Length: 138
Image 1 (cartoon, rainbow, N blue to C red):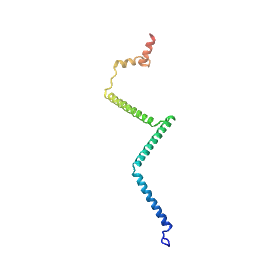
Image 2 (image 1 turned 90 degrees about the vertical axis):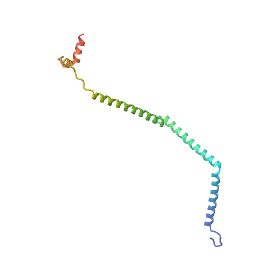
Image 3 (image 1 turned 45 degrees about the vertical axis):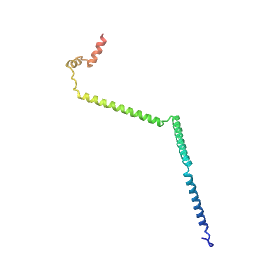
Image 4 (image 1 turned 30 degrees about the horizontal axis):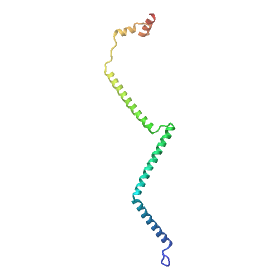
């Protein structure tokens, strides 16, 4: 304190700041307690969400106009890719089943007459050569 019993400038300033803080706190509490504050907060939230949606729609339009793949294009292509992979997997399973069936079957034996007929042409071309020469003679 000062010499005459009065508070010093630092103490007066601290007291003023304390009083201002208390008044601001009281005013804020009164503001928050009102119904209008809740309505204002709800409207601000709605507006924020609306602006965010508009921004995302604008970004989608920019991407679409630039002819770049957008989110919807990527998700659609992802679904198509998944369907194609599923189909390919089914085809591979069928191929494996057919391969197993083919391996399980006994190998067919060639008949004696077929083997002797292909060797009897004598020109080294086999049956195909015999057919082509007989086809040109008619």
